[in-house]
Length: 258
Ligand SMILES: NC(=O)CC[C@H](N)C(=O)O
Picture (cartoon, rainbow, N blue to C red):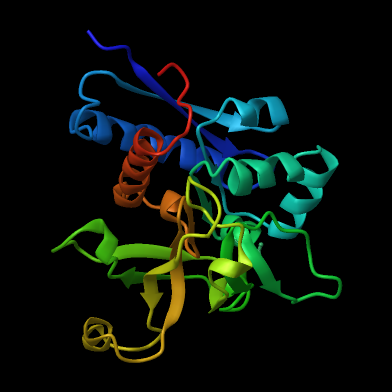
């Protein structure tokens, strides 16, 4: 029998929607284990854990940065000495990371200043984000998104937007550290989700209309403006865990226990 592969996935637990991600990750894991990526059958294990310290981060093969308030998250991370280890995790070790909402802001290379002085970011995604694109908490909304990366013929994903950022501009490979496992030249920035505000489904399908970029990936770094963890729809978590497994198997990364 082959040795089990245990993948440790952390959720940064300084502030924000931590428990919700952990719950959905656990559900997603059982989906991934019941139809595992090829060659990991029977021996794929996941451990999910909260991350508050650099040693806890070092145990992780992949990380989720949840929604919340990115300014607060950055201040707390700085105080705990976590900002540099997080940058190392994302930009030097190129481990898979997913940021939701405030997490997307943290992973952007640039954020359009909404306050004087700006804020500290982790970076890794070659994009510039615009914070609070749709206004205040009161203007929160749910919208059906067609997310092609989930596969053909999928139902729209009911995306929850709460003081959500959007990707205002793709800076590209040069703006970020690059996310290819090999290092060096960065991976391209891929737009994986667009929200067409007040526009019809037909325009979405035709790819017309301007729309806001609300899901983006560059190599191992993935970001969404919205909060899949606040729904019981497990599809994006399942997709991401599969990406994590693939990346760890095909990249030159060390997997705990492998
Ligand atoms: N729901 C959220 O995560 C809101 C993000 C928040 N507006 C920020 O900029 O950090």
